[in-house]
Image 1 (cartoon, one colour):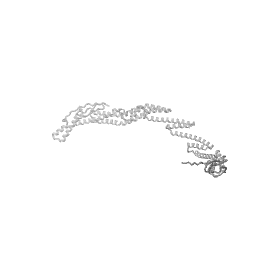
Image 2 (cartoon, helix red, strand yellow):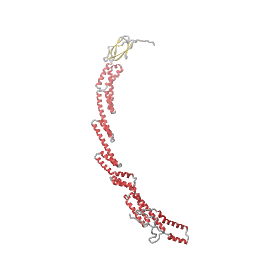
Image 3 (cartoon, one colour):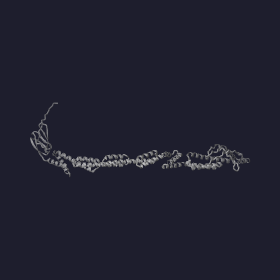
Image 4 (cartoon, helix red, strand yellow):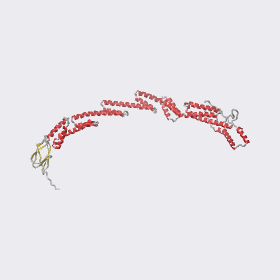
Length: 511
């Protein structure tokens, strides 16, 4: 900018009586008394002249031009005449002083804007506009030197307005600087990022994005180096090392999205690899015939947190295979027990199958049949073991029903066939009466329970079906006797004696 030097203006003394305006008014007074309003106007004009000449310069503050000290308004212009030598009237002088003050006021505003921009290092972000504004100020100085205060004021106003526009553009500059800084971060240009974030901090010290950005930019080179190493480890399959380096980068720059994302992605890959390794071990155990150990590995894989459904499906599949193997083994045992006609054992094996899978029809139907055969076997065993009960018609009929039930089975096994043949013989023999000799003493009354009352006799013969019988003897004054005997089945006695021989002693005791 061109250096400006303004000469000090010396105050000018002037006499109102010498002013043409004042002389004319005096002559008019001599000719005719002026009106009161005219006198008031003249007095006011005189007061204004005195104010402009003496008071106004004292109250105007000192301003600095862009490159020189402002001239005190108390100093009066040195020339009191125009170029043609015509004297300047007080009113014109007052107007010039007012125009001069206006120019100085606008200049003060310009300097205020300049003072605002100077600490903001405007030359680094608004140099052209700033220089143009100062150029306007220099031009205004030239006008000021030639005492063309109106043009000086207008030119100063242009410079002031230009500086105001620069100040108003600061938010836009901040926005663009943030964009450029982010671009620097993306392109790993730490120098550019620091420069732009620093500019934002200069223009907007409270900007949180810039505060964070400076921290990130300071570690950008280190973070970038860590990320490059991590990427290489990842490509080489060294996932643990890759995750470590990604994590270090994320720790240095927690806002680095790539580092944070890669930490999670690599961690997921590590987990998936671990899952695959454990699952492979489980399948290997399964192939080696160790299903229970395989299930333990599958459960471990399910607890990792990834592909849980796959691990649970493997567990289910293995459990099904174990169950199928157990069921197959139980079927073999069931078949063996059924072939051996061990029906209760078959029922127990079917129960084991149904515990594994309660919906298996072969087990449901097989158990029902085995249970019926087991009940039939029990009845046959009991009937054969107690043929003496057949003498009771009801028992005989029930046993006969059991016998016919057994005969209705289409493919009886050896055990059932033997039981039925043996029972058939017992049933047939149970209906053939056998003579039994009964001996008494003609004093005892004999009753054959469930048969008849035989009365008193010495000896008698009774035809009885094979079975268990009870003979009861009674005699007055003697203790009652009971004799149990079996007829048939090779147990028929030669004779059955029923006699009451033990007297009952009466006792009369006084109370």
